[in-house]
Image (cartoon, rainbow, N blue to C red):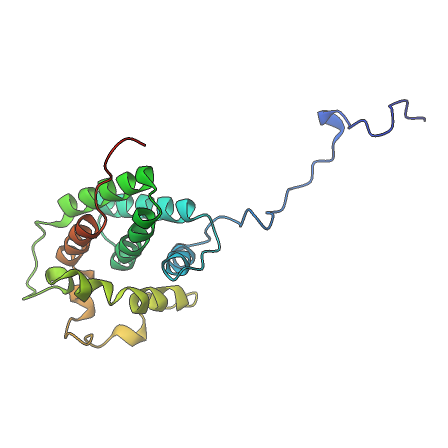
Length: 194
């Protein structure tokens, strides 16, 4: 059997081999789990992103929205801290559409958790921005470094933090609402049109 096509003529689509396409160096595979997402947020916060920062931030906003709708999970505070840190990146890079998305997500979270009942005398997010932002790398490294099957709270945060806040206070919905307020305070609303 001879091939009468001119040299270099591509095969018709139905004749092309049906091999799965591997992710290229410019297209990393999708986030495998929450640790992967938070680890990449930490990379972005520290200035060494592996992925497109927009993909990371959109993954975070989707997770915060899901938690606001369905209820917070044990990792919700780390996701919000990630959003706070990456929101600063979006503002510094003048990505107005992304800043709007971050702020809308933070407003949604704040509304969902601001009036939650609890018995805690205080919360980590009750203070100034520095009280919360100083914990971002430590909290995110704990979550990103946890291995499969590890308690995401980690053995390292079983004790109160340097300010005396317990893991339960960190996971309280009132803390989540406070972190969401900090996002709104630290990431200013964009002005002007895109």
